Amino acid sequence: MGSVYFYLKIKAKPRTTPEMNSLVVVEALKRVFKVVTAEGHFTEIVDYRETKHRLSVWPSTKKALIKVKAHVQMGYDFSKIKWEIYETNGKVKLQAIPAPYILSISPDINYYNLANGLFNKFTNEDFNLIQTQCIATVREVAEKSELPHLAAEQAKMLLTELASMHHWEIEGVKLLDS
Image 1 (cartoon, one colour):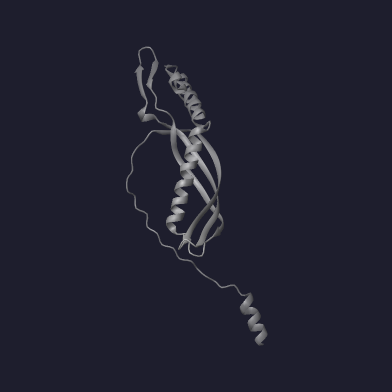
Image 2: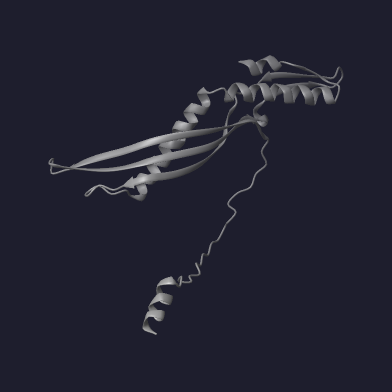
């Protein structure tokens, strides 16, 4: 009888019911005219190591292998585009178009092989710093990639199509090339 009790105790899985409460507060809402014209998916592998020397004798190294998958959206804030509309002859003249910029970065960060040193442990500040640095690296790589060119080409096509739908002519689309 005792062996049946111990068998069931070992095999029985504890039943836990997690409880989570949250409160979401709307801080601000505003109208914007931002258009995503290109998106990219980037993967970054980071080998993180930090060594501290205790009393200049004992090195203590914490390390982690980090995989970052990021979804980057690039586009334009159309409210910042300067244009003139000539309704009499059906023309839209673009005067100034800002460069495309990153509208959002959605990272998915996974930590592998986390190893704390004896005197050098990971803290929440370490994880926040690593996340900030990873996002900054993805931002830099995305801005140097073909993503801005793709965003400009898509915006050019979008503006041209919108104008032609209304039988208008658009001038200054070449501004998107620079």
